[in-house]
Image 1 (tube, rainbow over the protein chains, first blue to last red):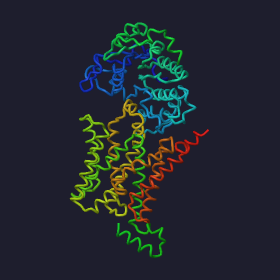
Image 2 (tube, rainbow over the protein chains, first blue to last red; image 1 turned 90 degrees about the vertical axis):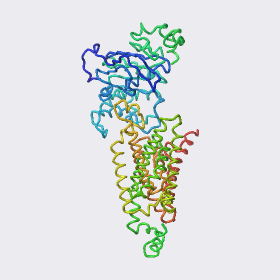
Image 3 (tube, chains in turn blue, green; image 1 turned 45 degrees about the vertical axis):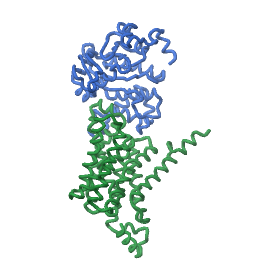
Image 4 (tube, chains in turn yellow, cyan; image 1 turned 120 degrees about the horizontal axis):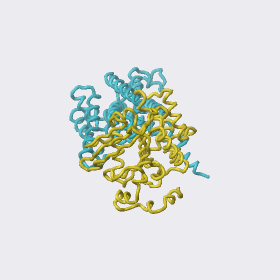
Length: 264
Length: 294
């Protein structure tokens, strides 16, 4: 956010993954995957189910250790980046128990835990950060609501606010546009542009191609390895998608891009 | 138990009114205080058990401590040491079998805790008497020795200290472990910390209500509070309050009506849960029906 230095972002690498391999008990999930993302970009991560998208996320968050290759975030190891609160993950709604007795405010405050002392007692600066984050996602009026009382889009915004409050420089979003309303979608798109302006790097895992075209500067096509990555206009072609999806081009591609947006 | 009843009748025949009789002796007041304390501690922990979905785990650990209690008695160790060792051991064994086999977790939990419990049953009848068996199975907060009392106090102190220091981390661990990990919180540590605390609380609780029913102490207050509030902090307060009230009231009823304390305490807890289930402001079933009506 405001505290991010105003040095030119373009030459700073946020994510630097070099030829990483990840396997689970001998089953290869990802091999030779390389990805370099600079500060201040929005990158779409596209691939089939089981193509290694979530494995890549896990590797970037430090949940799985690559058997080969290295990952650096902001020039330091994933573990250090974790400690610096550099990576924030915005979960899919299905991963969260929404009957949990916490308020919107509590959820966003969880973004500050990593910066607090052992007892996690919020200071004034933490409360300010939470308030600021809630204002940005336009949820400040609902801050005392139980998280379960929010709509799908509002829930998504609450978790986005948590990432904002965390002041992470790398944001990992898993299907952020699933089941959100038009207002949330507009707001999120606007926020993503602001984040880019502020030098954040946003990695969006998505199935929705229209969103990729709309928001993403860069695209990574993935199927057990990085098949292609680069500027959306160059990489996001029917031919590349056919390779990514093993010849099965989803018909979204063939139709006019607007047709998928209208019914939302 | 029978000794106590005799003393109770002699007391009630003197000038003290019958309803005050339970408070007439120091050791009974001690027992009451201990069960109130254990109630509060288990109530606090029950919030995490309910939210984490570890009811079955609580059941498993509380049963698995049985051989530990018996072995400790046999070799002259404080009972809590053996109980804790077996509680943690059972959890470790569950984790090990889960990792090494293709069985589902609830199957393994059921398998491990019944095995431990059976071992405890065999040991207790060989090593100790049937009366001890009843004591371990159904509890007896009236027959607490000073030694037992101190152990319970220390255990409770440890559990409360851990839960207070880590209460935010544990809440986050229950709510969103992925986020907890991604900000550098050691969730593996929290997992085993919570399991150790569970073992300790089960040890404390089995003093009062016995092995069979201790799981109720570790679930019911949390479940009750969960129906009453949408705030985590309030949930812990309500669970502690309802659990402490249940223990005091249950202990009192047990003395007056001459029934095992475990049964009384858990019955009061269940009654409070039923009240919440029916009349909770937002989540009680009567409320739901009313809001469904046009």
